[in-house]
Image (cartoon, rainbow, N blue to C red; front, side):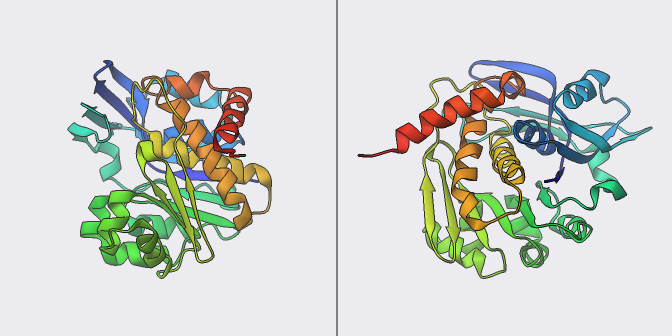
Length: 301
């Protein structure tokens, strides 16, 4: 089934206790696409400036990522982010950010992409996400992401968006901020009251929760001995999840626990190296090998 993602595309500078990288490909839509492409072809919708390096474009096309929706704006510059991680690396400190082309008009969704049946709206203004969601008239599954900024400053727009999506992915701090509930199960069920069928709550190194009206699933993170760069972990998780779901055909809620497990695996691959290097070296065989290790870890006699 066709899978499309909209979101940021950027050039990053990242520093962690294990080193640093400069002028590397980043952005929510990029981590999502590289992760999802391990399972299924991906349609990418985004915008970059004329400074976007051709080698970045080549990296994406090698991964079965359709760039017909990648708009290059002449006279504009690509979004740039510089961040630093310290200590347990659970939170990034933004050193500098230049919105550049992201402060301009949103990209246009190609007509050929509008029949996509699986849609992921990566983090951006919720009114823009809702506008884009409305353009995919044949979608079986629409999932969105969000962040503290929109919860604090665009709550009404975010609330309206929730009535237009099948599911939402957000982290534990964000869901508590949105609902004012400390208990994550209660918080997830509060979000369900706004319209989505499921809520996925990311808890970093502590795994994730899936909350639906009928039940709750809790999955641990994959044990990682080496964590070099957590940038894009959440987007890689979402990419693995949505990529697996799109590869299954018609969506059913019963597919979600296994999809979350695959998202957990792709996130574990992403954090082992700087930037996209972990996902670049990943193969479906490697994903399946790690997935079997994960299943064995979860099995209790």
